[in-house]
Image 1: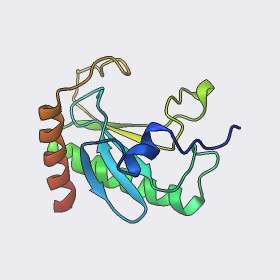
Image 2: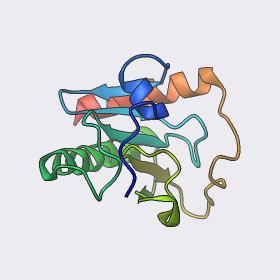
Image 3: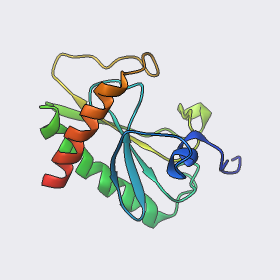
Image 4: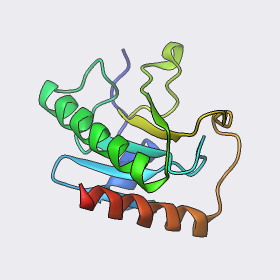
Length: 142
């Protein structure tokens, strides 16, 4: 497996070198919105630790990310009046991974509404800002 690249886009976001629509931050992880969401409220849970993916992350960092993903899933159902939630996590190119920093997609879903194709359409910044505010409020209310 290749080494972790500290210049991947999520590492740059974590260092504050690139902007994001942040929903939550704690000592171990950050939650922000995907700029090309597959559904409204599509969030990413990203550990601060430099882990390429599930194959090299420390167990305690993985446990924190998954616990936080569960909280984000619960909050996203409330914030977006969703009927369910899809969690996705990819490992290495053959597994569908595109950004090589561990992350978990949390995608609120509505019955009968298909997800958009991956990386198909950038959302407007004002829409993302509104969705981030809604999800952050729902997360704090848990």
